[in-house]
Amino acid sequence: MFEGDSNRLIHQALAKTPKQAPTFAFLDPDGMELEWRTVKLLADHKRGKSQYKIEMWILLSTSGLVRMLGDFADPHAAELNEHRVRNLYGATGPWERIREARRRGDLRGSDAKQAYAFLYMDRLAGLGYKHLLARPIRGTRGELYVMVFATDNPAGSAIMKWAQEQPRVVKRAPALFDVPEDRPAFEDLHTGWREDVPFELPAWEEIELPNT
Image 1 (cartoon, rainbow, N blue to C red):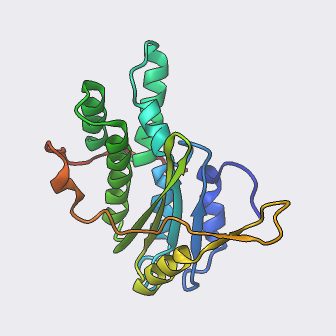
Image 2: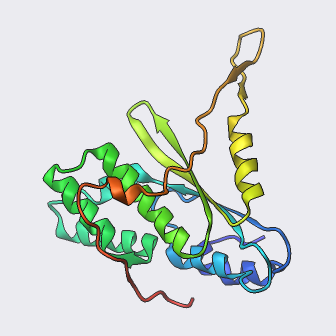
């Protein structure tokens, strides 16, 4: 058990994680706290020691990205937000292009949310993950988050799809019976998405990631 900032404690946690054991990481930040260095350390932990990397289930705040990369009158706030997004992606380039298009009105908010999610999945694919699934989580005002599942194992992808297709039983007091409720399915929407973007996206430019 470790308590504290997972970005700072990830080395200690991985030191106690056997490299041959099946491992699943659930990364559930409140907002933009998850740093790319943490994701990369998880992906690299079993590399060369096991057939499959650590599977990851990541909560990505797409609504937060649109909000943080909007227009800000306060330049200090804008700079701080950009710093957080750089750490989230671990690179620059494409997300700035999406931000510019959104600010000009070339992209709707929903399209920008999808683009930010797919850019994150691009980064996961760059780590070698072969199966990437996305499931939107919506509120009354539209999409809030995207749950991103990353795995090397086709069985893991099939199991996650199957589990998500099962109805969720919701207890509704004072109803006599529990009510089954369908849930949004995980989908492989990431493949080929760049062809649908109405402008060219630049290549990723890696930023220097700290070691601790």
